[in-house]
Length: 566
Image 1 (cartoon, rainbow, N blue to C red):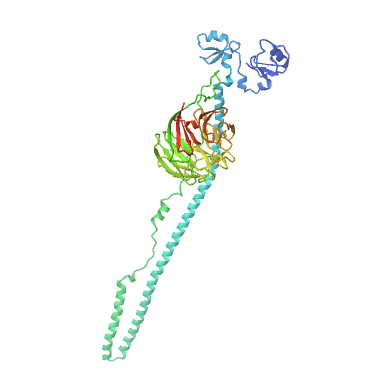
Image 2 (cartoon, rainbow, N blue to C red; image 1 turned 180 degrees about the vertical axis):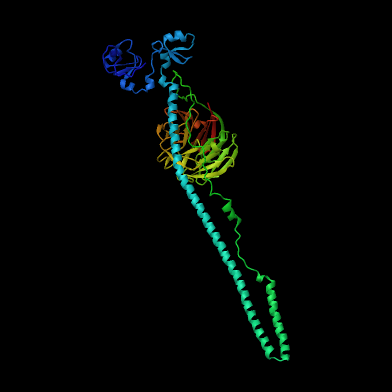
């Protein structure tokens, strides 16, 4: 077993204490400078690999404990049994593995292990797990930050609602009190009018009573008799007046009361609380990177490079795109339908064609540029370029209309869908990502971008064309530059860009009048199409990963070409 001793193992056997300068990974022991020299000259050990002792001590403790010698026979492990997936010494083979069929030399098995697929998979998986942890951590931190903001917003909403309720109740209270005063004044006025009339009648009765008393005392019988008729007539009129008052509602008792609106009563009795705080658990927008988890096993093959030398295009059909003039963007949908967006100084038409080239539907838009498909809700995202509004139009594929307009406060050109988000090339603020549900924007690459630049993604990579500098640039999704392709002999004024299932990049060159393919590492390229195949200022391109088809659209000739990719 390996030891972590700082002393030279050879010197220890001679009872000499010398510090180790190097570690021999095959002898599994430390050596001082003197012993190292002899070790490097000896025929048996001159080809052994040694590392500085400081580097040896950087190894994890569990790796240091791994012995190159058999625990049972104390003999060096030299053979690997693939059936049992374990290293063996010669004695182990004789005793325990004599019937095993797949017996290999251990040096053949471990050859190039650090460049094997298994090591690469482990390395990439660890990297992706770390990135996923960071994504989750950032997502949770962002969620943590939004909770106080949401709480303040809800509190504000509660106070605003309470204020609205108070204002409304104050108003209806003022209205009912106003009505109360008006009713009391009206009834009081009528009673006062009756009292005034009664006062007048009472005075008239008193006068008649005085006259009757004087007649009784001083008038003759003839005078009394004649006066009685006149007085009787007047008394009868007064009596009729009294009877008329009692017969109508003038003598009804006026009582004011309040009938509370049932809605007010319900507000008090039937509404037990102001509302309810709802805690929702919605799916996060983060997309975790996943890889096919392979069993970690020792392999001798190196990671293959993705060659594109044998890729070829088979022409399928020519598509009439005159419905969408001055084509800027194209997309080949999973069901075979084709989408074309266009731009001019006034307006444009978003055209969706069936697989046979017939028109499926059109949507009239202000000047637009590129188009992307949002699989999540079966809709299209359309950018507006420099001639239109500073926004993104979301087109409902089912209802065939604009269902949403997202303001972005800048002119945007190339657009692509990444998970549930959209990534676009902004004219002045760089390459950015936007959540179409809540409009939250995040920066990927900050800075001025050329007009009519296109973007696309593949895995954790982002690809961007610059027609002014004649470049294709690859970034990671954190905005770090990976590589730049520039070769004006083969690509001028690059426009639309797309990526196939193997990470190969397809780019149209408007001025070079061609389509080229670039390898995933950006170092190799080939021309696939040129003017000989009918290209005339090609502007947009899209590779359908579902159908393994490529569509290329010319800018102004009203036609596009469909190819199968072999």
